[in-house]
Length: 94
Image 1 (tube, rainbow, N blue to C red):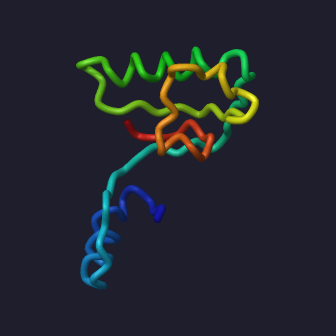
Image 2: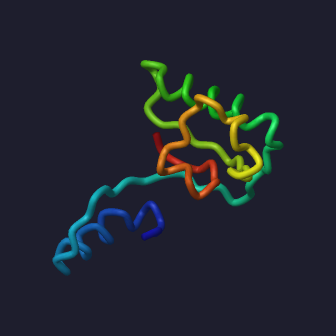
C-alpha cells in the first residue's frame, strides 16, 4: 500500500484496527521518472548499490534506474538481484 508520508501513522493505525497483519511499514522514496540502464551497465549499477548498502554510515539506498532483467541476464553476474528488485524498478529502501 502506498500513502503520503504525512499519513503513514494514520494508515498504519487503520490497518491494525482492521486486524490486517503487516509484514513491514516504512516510508520510502519512490521515483517519478525511471532511467533505463543498458544491459552492459546493469552489473555495475547493482554492484554500486551493494557497496552503498554495505557501508556502515548508510541507512537507506534509493535509486531511479530500470533495467530489463532478461537482457541483463548473465551480465548481472554475481550482483544479487533481491526480491525487492524483481520489479525491475530501482526504488527500494535497503
